[in-house]
View 1 (cartoon, helix red, strand yellow):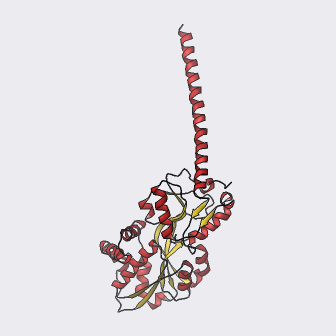
View 2: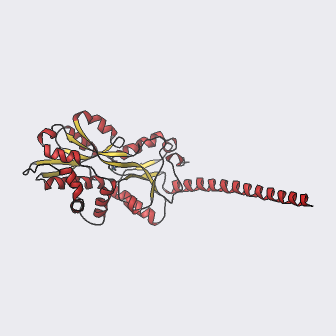
View 3: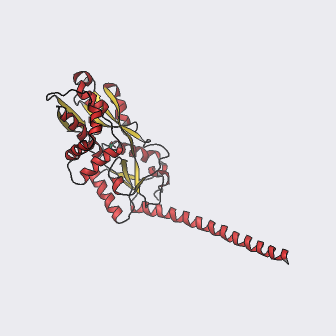
Length: 307
Ligand code: PBE
């Protein structure tokens, strides 16, 4: 009697376990299918198109490379050349409607504070790893303007510092105003950069910079610190390639927006012997393909082949 009952319970248990396992199996298969379908649907909806930014950006060059080197992308994906403003407008529209979108994205940038976004994994390493933003100067600046050089060489801040300036400007302040306010609130940091640096009387210095928010923030902060030491600072907006070329040619005095070792690799390699590399002014930058977290995709490799 005892034995028979246990056998029955055992049988029942075994049977239910089987059902559970089978259930899990089915569940998993349907889930996988659903996910395949949803990434296919998403890809159809975005027309197999990545929303890009300005053609001169390092991230656009990397994306062209990704479009060649990932088989699935090479099979017919495209990147839209646009502007950062158009890209963030598209992003905001998509997120409002919970629609799919794939952008060329980077951090530090306010979009990560404003929206829930994720980088797609990049198993081929096309977009590089976490990188730094470097300060570069023309050869001879150290001798010609030792005071400015010292400040430029010491300029170092965190992604959070940069983000707070970018967010203040995003909230409607001019970048110059946002930079001034950040400086007032961070006099201890400024003191580290300027300690022992002599004031000058109107020496002219030219900073060349790209016009992304990150570089508008850093360049405005450094420009203001230099102004407070008596420099007459000119800020010249240029393209990535011109930023390096101008500093290498000794036309621009310095720049604080060199994203390395990945984003600006090619142009840096071209000019590195003709310029002075002052090292990182920020650590923890990154570029890649970015999507809203509600999209069911984790890796560039899993973007579907166009059919
Ligand atoms: N960015 C922002 C630039 C550098 C700063 C990542 C869009 C780029 O060259 O790609």
